[in-house]
Amino acid sequence: MVAFGAAAYAAKVFFTDPSFYAYGPYRGDSVAEIASDKPLYKGPDYCETCHAERYAQWSKSGHYRPEAGKVVMCETCHGPAGGRDKRGLFDHVASGVDHPASGKLPVPADTVKLCSLCHEKMPGRPAIQRQIEVNAHAGGQACTVCHNAHSPKIAVAAVSKSAKPGDVAAGKQKAARCAGCHGADGVSGNPAWPSLAGLQEAYLVNALKAYQTGARQDPMMAGLVKGLSDADIEQLAAYYAGLKCK
Image 1 (tube, rainbow, N blue to C red):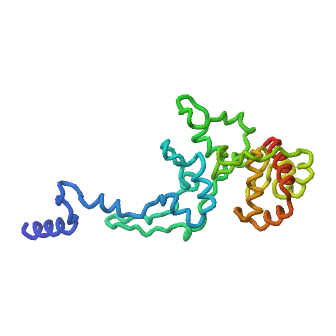
Image 2: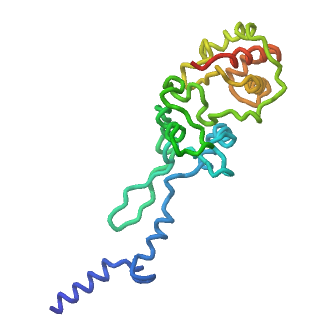
Image 3: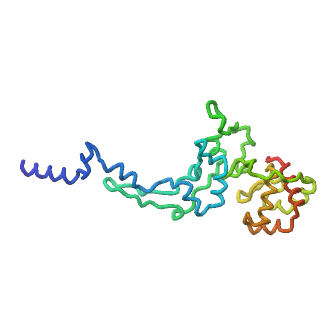
């Protein structure tokens, strides 16, 4: 019995965490351990270092409205940028892989399913949240056909008001050089190149002039817009603004 009692006492000492009862009848260190663990969600600032252009688009869009309590973070759509190893029974491990060491974060393929989580029209959803009838909206096409995922809605106040209305017919002729990437009717068949159909005329004027000045950086676009006059740009913008995003 003495030997059993000694063994039981040794087992209690060995298996009981040192923090037990230090703060009451619970493991007082558990909260501190969880708090010190590497975060699974890194936050948008973690993404800015490598993705400054997309971060800038996002931070000026409707997805970033802290004054309204609405911030849709990068990882909401792309998944967590951090990772954790599976913890053992008694140990605490926080050495899981991180992006970009673990490779690229996933780019959502079914944007209709993803975007409708917040934007499908339903009773009780706040009116400030833009809502659509999913089956009737755009014929069920991917949202990215018409919307830039990082800045879904163009901020009207941010674009120039000085653009002059352009000649649509003349713009159509000049648009032949753009069709290879942006589609014959301004609807791109490749997600790497944006669709231009239906974008605001003033926005398109600003964008093309930004490539001329170097405010926007892209070698191919810089070469294409190099010889365009202001009239050429206005005509192109008028043509694409008048197209429908079918």
